[in-house]
Length: 263
Ligand code: ATP
Ligand code: MG
Image (cartoon, rainbow, N blue to C red; front, side):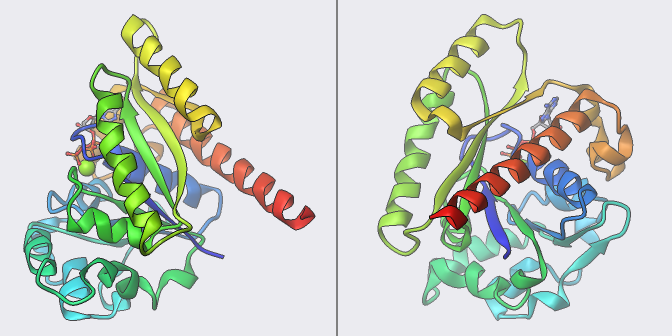
C-alpha cells in the first residue's frame, strides 16, 4: 500500500524541501520505492536532486492543469534511486488557474492516481503558503509531515496549519493524519529552541518525531551539487539524521500495522 505524505508548513525556510529530498533518498536507501513531487514554483526539490528546472519541457503543472498523464512527466533520478515529478515557475500559473477550475482541490489527487500504486511512499514538497496548491496536497495525502524550526513564532504558525488540516478533514479527506512534527535546524545550545521543543512535545506528544535534524552545513551545501546529503557526504550529521528519520517512520509503520492486525 502506498502512503502519500505532504511536507507542509506555510512558514518559509523551515526545512520542507531539505526534508523532502533527504527523506526521499533515505527511504530509497532502505529499498522503498519513492516518488518525490515538487509542488513549489521555486522548484527547489527539482534542483535539489539535480534536475535543471529551467530546461524542462513538461512539469507536474501540465498534469494538474491539462490532465497530462504523470508517467509522461516522471524523471528517474538514477543516483538517488527515486522518481521525481518536477516543478518550475510555471507552477505559479497553476496556483492561479486552479482557482477557476472545477474540482480545483482534487486535481493533484486525480493527477497522481495513475502512478501512486507504483510507490511505497509519495512525498509532496509544498510551497510556503496555505494556498490552493498546498490544499491540493492535503486533499491527496494520507498524512502531513510538519518540519519546523524551534523558534518563537513557530507555534503561532502551527495554529493556522492545524485549522487548515482540520477543515480538510471535516470536508473532503476525513482520514488525513498528522504523520509527525519534525524539529529541523536544531541547535541544542539555544535555550529558546529547547523551550519551544518542550512545548511542542507537551501539545503533540508522540506525534513529534524523536529524530531531531541538527543544523548541519552539509545539508545546506548538498543542493548546490544537485545531491541529497546521503550522496554528497553520507557520514555527515545531516545525512545520518534523515536516515534515522526514515528508520523511525518505518518502525512506526510496522507498529501501527501490527496494532491494526491485532484488532
Ligand atoms: P521554502 O519555504 O522557501 O520552500 P523550505 O521550508 O523548503 O523553504 P529549505 O529550503 O529546506 O526550507 O531550507 C531553507 C534553507 O535552510 C536552505 O538554504 C537549506 O539549505 C537550509 N537548511 C535546511 N535544513 C538545514 C539544516 N538542518 N542545517 C543547515 N541548513 C539547513
Ligand atoms: Mg521549499
